Image (cartoon, rainbow, N blue to C red; front, side):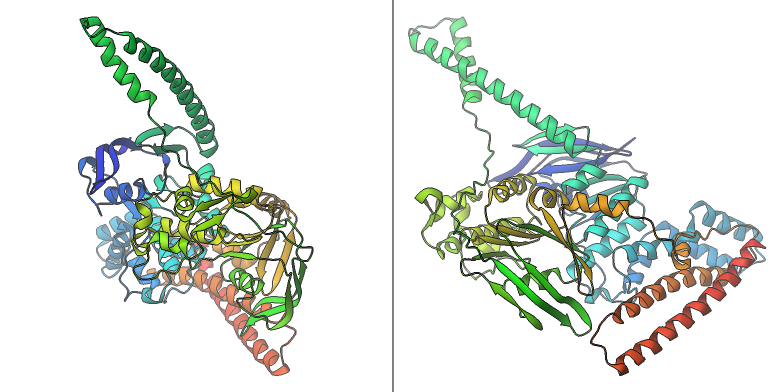
Length: 620
């Protein structure tokens, strides 16, 4: 069943042509990833599909009876609403079904109307709706349902938009970088969600494991031509390599033919026959093909690096906390030459704080960090490049010198270096403030590397970089002889680059795992499953209503609310219990925590008692 047809669309901005006569279609159950280099029109195509932009030519045709949702990089919400109100204010048809059912309860004598409303609740599984949206919000770390949208961070807004799209269960979901602002646990949950839900997907993403595990087709826009691959990311890499080898072979044959025809042209007399004129026309066509150059510029990174001494970096009993939140607790570690460490952990466990202490941007509360005399940090932070008014791209690099040293005593100019980072001579004289997000990231990466560091710290370096740039960056890092520390949610990138992991578990607990991310997941999955608590079992419980139920609507609603409240209380109970692990607690603080914990336990017992009471009615 065809959901979407894109016919011969084109888009230009002034003299810049992004794409011409692009055509493709999306069918039911397809999960398609759209791949292209940054700056070649991926976001423009998504904006055209969503109606935020218009193609210069061509048509966008959706099937009339399907529901489509869009996840953009910059979602728009009513800032006056809460997180929960935002979900309830959406155009989800289930909300109308629930509203009709509530109205029918006000007139129980109208049995026909009640039965119709009841049947609609059954048909749309509306009994589960509240539980569903709360579970999705909690999975995406949006537990505070009463929080105003105006107070959410950019990442939280993106996760709220994702939750809203998933809850609406569209037939076709169009996604722009869905894994941005998600931690590894959320990404893996989203992969599982897409695996079990019958949602047709069309997405732009640079997360190659996500491509591997979710997508069943990849469309690539390469030098203005669309190529389709009916498989996941591994299949795409294999078939793309085969295509490039065929094209190179064909290009070689064409160049040989061109040389032969050129010799013939030079021997021809001025008077020409009709046959020779035809051959001359063919010659110019062959000449055009033979002189074509694939526009596959790659970032060439061969910058110089200062030699590391025997002493690198040492942590001695380092501790750090923000009020009651412990980040490091007497952390000891001695870095060795050539170490490649990946850092993983949930958002908020202190990964960036650790990097700031390591680079001495921030100071520990206790202990000390000892840095070797030869160590020169290159710190790529999430904050990115600092934009100065009226500063041009070339001026950013010239701040480090007109010439930059390379290996073996060679050097290049600032202009040549920028060309290696995919900035054309014309682009180099653009104002930095006019660059796209991905271009700023690339320029920032350039400024970090040209300072010739021998200890690289990369905090989310893969965000907004296209797959071509990521592959080149990976190749550079694999050859980099210094130390590397990487914080990234890009599991593919982590697997290629790091040798072992610092796993931030929260509350100052950091495990040193001897392997890459895939090794860690295999290890975690092999651990014995802990028996589920009563609260965990309730989280999986479905609240399907049936005709034999003797619960009123208000009791049904209370039952579902109790489940959500129990989940929240269980979370609070765990948080409080973790606080008792702090060895610096005073007796007064321990007494206060004990009282709070006892209060929560009593609330859980009370809620559980009411839950069992209402559940018993369902079984009567």
